[in-house]
Length: 223
Image (cartoon, rainbow, N blue to C red; front, side):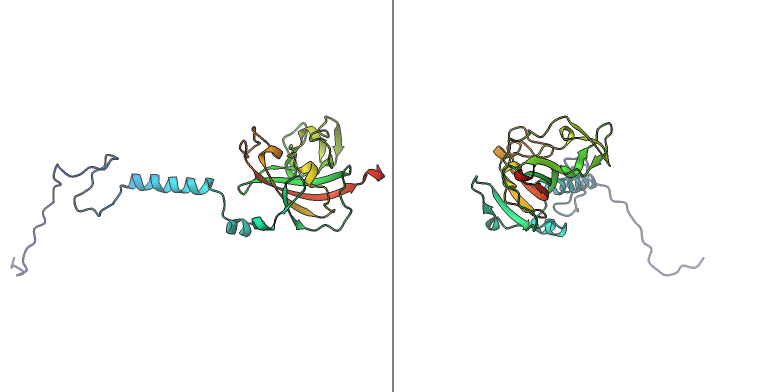
């Protein structure tokens, strides 16, 4: 067969020298790899670690705003006589909660963007279903007096305040002055929150935000 006249090419397989550097993970890195190159195994570990840190980090204010939560600048909070700092998200237009008034509220305890305790997740007896059951207490009373074992049969099922989420002590005083329909945000210090024991996702000795929505007021004169 006639020669094509094209030069022939011979390909040689390059053998890696035995002195090729090894990666700490045990994989061999060829001598001509880029500086700082990592193995696929190390890269996967780094990506997983980065994702985990992002998941546990508190959401930035911009993210909280996108989720529909109002971001309140620290300088906009008002200081109550007992030292609690609060901000009225919504000014109510109904009756005012006075000391001694019986009130119904919804409350949410929020720690680093996570709702840790909420009246909207009350437990029904004889089941594990959660309902949005308003929390009822007397403004200015000692915390926990209303948490008794009396049962109430409502449209959602058998319910008891004993099974409701425990509110922080700050709620019993800071509700005074609110009007029905109003929503108030409070910065709760550990001593008026859940103290050294913590609660749910709220760690011990940690401050958190408390959102209160006033639903109903029964003044002392009406009882």
